[in-house]
Length: 116
Length: 116
Image (cartoon, rainbow over the protein chains, first blue to last red):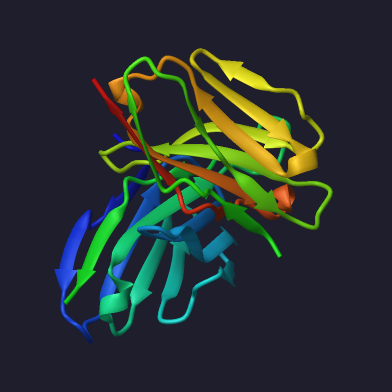
């Protein structure tokens, strides 16, 4: 089983609909992230959370919200989806700073969202 | 401001050729970290390497090698004797404040196609 699990893996929805992408992890990491991937743009940070009580905006947070329900769960919501939110979304976790931390982010398998 | 540029959008080579993927970065910090990730056709993101700004030694791992040059703000990635399984999108990324978490700035990605 994957350490970082995203659901759904694929979703097609219509403009104006509310969508939630869920992320759960079994790595025990406090730090979690949501990124968005668009062709030719790489990955861009939407939101991040360093613990359950901590939520921070990333580079492109407009139109999105998040909820950190528990250490293991970090959800991304699109309150009213629009076509330019069509993208591949990745959740990631990170171990705490320390000697053994290589800086690697552990990514989920991605959630492909299409907004018609 | 931080920026990562991967000028090569697509590269196509024939198996066994050597190929270099370029990465140029911009940062004002003296302490920063550089990363390479691989995204195979299946879509997941695979961590390849992290380098910190104080370590300019080149790194070799099997057929993969990385050349970090602060003088030219570059962190290039070379695959020797490429194989079809190397076909993927490769991302270079930068983090300025490691202990503030994985707020990576990604390049646009280079799509490598290795033909048999």
